[in-house]
Amino acid sequence: MANRLYIGGLSLETTEDELKTFFEQAGAVQSATVVIDKVSGQSRGFGFVEMSSDAEAKRAVSELNGKTLGERTLRVEEARSAKAPAGTSSGRW
Image (cartoon, rainbow, N blue to C red; front, side, top):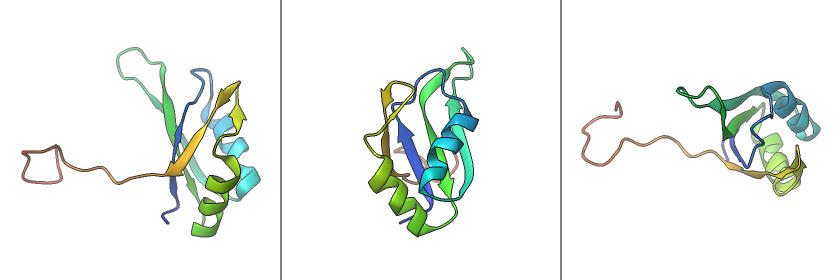
C-alpha cells in the first residue's frame, strides 16, 4: 500500500489543518491537502493525506473510513496514481 490516501466526502468548510489533525489519530501525517477549485476558490469536497509509513496508511484506512468529520462521512482509500487521458502519448497532459 502507498502512504498517500484519497479522502472523499469532505465538508466544503474543512481546512487542511483540521484534516491533518483528524488523521493524526492513525499516525504521523506528512501532509494534508484539500483540493480547491481554481475558478470558485471553494473546496471540491476531497483531498489527500500522506502518512509517514505504509502501516500508518493501512491503519488510517481501516480506522477512519466511514468516520465523520464536520458532519460528513469520509471515504478513505489508497490514492491511485494519475494516468494520462486516452489518446495521449506521454504522461503529460
